[in-house]
Structure formats: C-alpha cells, structure tokens
Length: 225
Ligand SMILES: Nc1ncnc2c1ncn2[C@@H]1O[C@H](COP(=O)(O)OP(=O)(O)O)[C@@H](O)[C@H]1O
Ligand SMILES: [Mg+2]
Image (cartoon, rainbow, N blue to C red; front, top):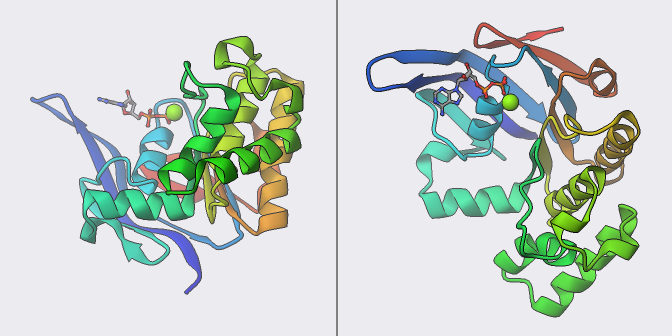
C-alpha cells in the first residue's frame, strides 16, 4: 500500500455538554503518495475539523485515521507527535507564526524540534526562505512582513522537514489574487518536485482545479465533485 493518509468511517461530533453536534459522519478518504486532493465545502461543513483529525491534532469520535499505514489510535501522544513531524506539514489559514521569532527562526523551529543542530537548521531555513522569495526578509519578525510574506514563511516552515504530505487549510484564504497565485505555485511545485502529497482545503475553484482530485465535503461525508 502506498497511502500516506487513510481514514475509515471517520465520525466527529462537537459536544457542548448537553448536545452532540455531528460534523463528520462515516467519512472515508485515502490519499496516495504524490497525489494532490482539494477539499471544497461550505463554511462550517467541517473542513478544518477533518484536517485536524488527519493531522492527529484531535481524536475522532469513532473511526480510524492512518498515517503512512499506522493507526494513530494505537500510538501514544508522543509517538503521534513524532509520526506527524516525520510525515506531515501544516499550513493554516492564518499563518500561526511565533510573533517574537524572526522568519528564519520560525522556519528552523521544526528542524530544531527534530534534533537537527542549530547551524544546519539555520542554513537549510535560509535556503528555503530564499527559494520562496524572502531572501531580504530573513531577520524580519512576522509583524514586519506583509500578509503574503507571512504566509510564505508559514509555507517554508511546513516544508522544511520535507513532509510526505502537506495539509493546507485555506492557505491563500486571506490573500489577494496575486499572492494567492504565488502560494499556489509554491505548493504545486512541491507536489511535482518532491512527489509530496497535498490535501488542500479551499473555497477557490481555481485552486481546486489544479489538484488531481476534487472532493466536496457535505453532510459529513466526502463526495467526488
Ligand atoms: N470547538 C468547537 N466547539 C463546538 N463547535 C465547533 C467547534 N469548532 C467548530 N465547531 C463547529 O463545527 C462545524 C464545523 O467547523 P469547521 O470544521 O471549522 O468548518 P469549516 O472549516 O468547514 O468552516 C461548524 O458548525 C462549527 O461551528
Ligand atoms: Mg475552516
């Protein structure tokens, strides 16, 4: 099997203490190594919830999530974190950069966490920031960058570990058309040059049309578009 991500009969409900609110209901998905998938769906249909489950940031109410053929439910929290760090990169709608750290330090962080030495981490991060067009912004803090630049830093941070799969939650959702296109190019390049899988949540049909497969999340399940 070459699935990087697989989920079977995945269900998830939020509970407010009194009431259960089902969001995902017996959802199935498998993503091959190297495959690119767009997930479209109306606001509130559960797209972010799904990505959080795929990334092991949250636990399903029922059903299973497998990353690289390993069932997350069978792993300790620590092992889940390791598996995630080894295989997945995340890009959020809002960059989630650490505000007191430079672009360089934000990008280097995942490598340092993996135990890479400081010098190598910084060198690799510098190269990657250059390749996303931020050569002259390396020492800038997030507050000193434009929205598009911040999102490029966030993408570099997600890519620095060469993840087998990139999970992106509306990565260009808060950017103008030009910046959104640049971000899309960066992400699709990765898919082609590194054979990484992509799972992109978007409401932009143009972005979706560049992916090999387009799925729609509706009534808690994924359907072919
Ligand atoms: N922490 C939470 N507690 C309760 N309900 C939530 C929570 N997070 C999201 N929801 C609800 O779950 C549904 C799906 O949310 P979400 O996955 O963020 O949707 P999307 O990303 O597709 O816009 C929405 O109706 C939302 O209001
Ligand atoms: Mg969302």
